[in-house]
Image (cartoon, rainbow, N blue to C red):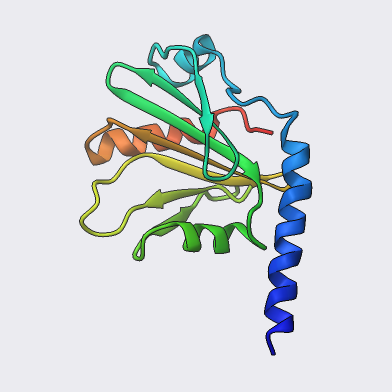
Amino acid sequence: MLRKPLALVLTIVAAGAAAMAQAATAPQCPFAPDYLKTQLGQSFAAGVPENGILGKACTYKANGIKLWIDAGPMAAPSSEMWRKMSSPPGTKWQAVAGDPDKAVHETPPAGVSPYPALSYERSGWLVNITVTGVDGKAAIDGWNSKLVKLRRIP
């Protein structure tokens, strides 16, 4: 009985390892500050590379706002499964209508302040973009609209 679950875990780990080998060639901080200023209307400092949950991550900062990008090979059989496993209970996702990369906006569970966020899958990768330091429903909705228009990676 244990063989099937163990085989599934080993298959997922092997697929993740192969995908991580490909991830080494992807840009860790994919956006230039000038591009972000044009797209988001804020003067961001150059991105700072860091380790992410999915793989490679990058943080950009501007006037109390932090934009965090985490991108890497799909770590689960589907993006929906990964989001459910890696998020607190009660988190919801709103699909972006007609998006070719199955983009969704994250809505945190009750008791957690809302924030702009975009998650999508592309070329076998899952990309999560989160913005902190933005308050108010109108501001969050505005940021979510801008995040959808950013150039997609990888």
